[in-house]
Length: 329
Image (cartoon, rainbow, N blue to C red):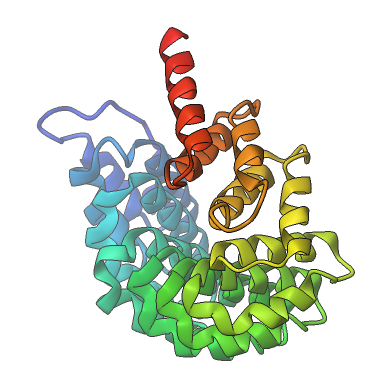
């Protein structure tokens, strides 16, 4: 049996060096093929036209480690890897390796927004995978598709009942990622606010907020969730109420308090939620003006965006001063 040692040669304009990888990927020794696949991870992004055909073929390799490295290599390519979508869909059925299936699901979520009609049905089927980790990755992938993944909403509603808490978390998060088009999931998400897992409750509250106005039926349940024993669940409920646009005084108070947390992500979410109620809630405009001095630029710009939508003289003045100060820096 011939055994080749991998030599990484810079790709020439004529593409001859790809032949080395082609030979390696066809070698009888799986260790040689693994090594070649691993090296392709490093060069795949810059040499798509040469590498992609090799990787598509390698997704069917008999060695699971080769298939793993192949999925990783495709993941580094970005948009050019869309040509591999049909092969990736087939790899969702990889019976031997959970890592391959989870990696492929992740890739389909990244690549499939403009190909939802192709990727959603197989991803929905994969929500029934025997492994919780794969089901979680599949739900996550569907959420990454955004509104394009709306056809998966019925399957995701069912997945909110999954026995695994990680799957329930990612499922609720996915419904939030789909947004308004997930309105049909509102009753199931309201029920999920009572989930035994605090993470599932938190993501359910967040999803209702991201669905927005169509989730108004959840207002009583979200108001009740302000009293959740877990502070992060309660805060997520407050943010959701702000996004829907009809929070109670307790929610507004929690959102204002959240601007003092060290986590800028939470401050950013709180500012956005406060912006949704600033025209109707007393004192919120002043809070948003104060947020223009936040140490994190993301929070500052979210506060600016909120103030731009407010019809009040003090808001307009603060925006103008912010712009002038920015120009001086």
